[in-house]
Length: 185
Image (cartoon, rainbow, N blue to C red):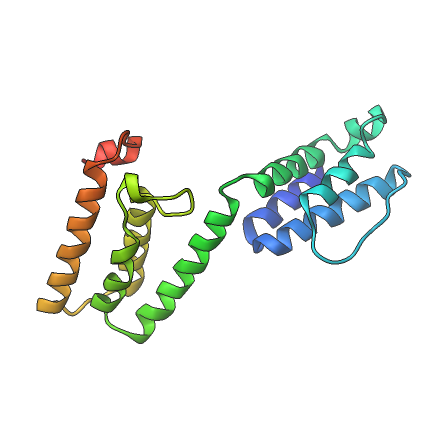
């Protein structure tokens, strides 16, 4: 029921990550100002630590906590998300997704699939920053949905077979399949 929380939620749904985090800081600063809390607005990049320090201002003020509960919950969720160990992996995933889209626009599908191939690694060769089989399935579905009509041919068939073989090999050595991979297999 908090209008500020609703507005922030809309921002999270519609803005880019950086803009949404800045919007979270702005809402938090406005809420603290309305409650006459001693907040110092800082410029530049928004960090989880900065947001945490702003949240702590509300800690001993029950009325302020009550008035801005929804907003504080959203900002706390933002802090947890920004501190999550997989955040940098997903940032890289999005950057890779953009690169693939650019590559799709400039070249044929076989060359795009050949770019993916060396990145498909079995469980025992993956690091925490490498993509999982499920990540690659998401990328492939996304790529094929963006490409539209594809010219079939021997080169495409060969590239698709190599990607399929690499994915099957990787899936077969997974110690535990995710529910999605279990359904697919």
